[in-house]
Image (cartoon, rainbow, N blue to C red; front, side, top):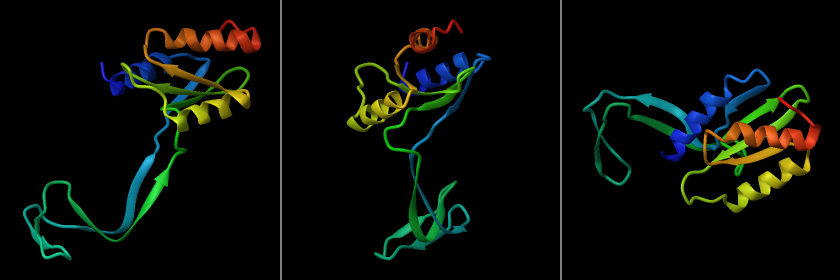
Length: 142
């Protein structure tokens, strides 16, 4: 099972819990500018003289600039645990993949602020990880 599959299974498993509201928390970069759609098969010449053929889904963006979104290092899943309103972030990992330094710093910031940050490798145990953290902090039983 790949990391994306682990992520999907965790979202499905936890999404049914009435005491937990979660959502996918994306980070990344996109490009924005003047969008020009062209016909598939149309040919254009770039600024270096290369001929490009437009394929399905291709667009041209003029005056493009990058747009960053999300916080680097934040978890793949974000949410709120009732009844205390405790913030939770879940970073999904698969196999031998480890947290980056940015993810470790983000985890510390969330934990130092009273939130919960979990590294989840197994969709079957993630709910118990959350319950254990809430018991530790609030004497909570779900």
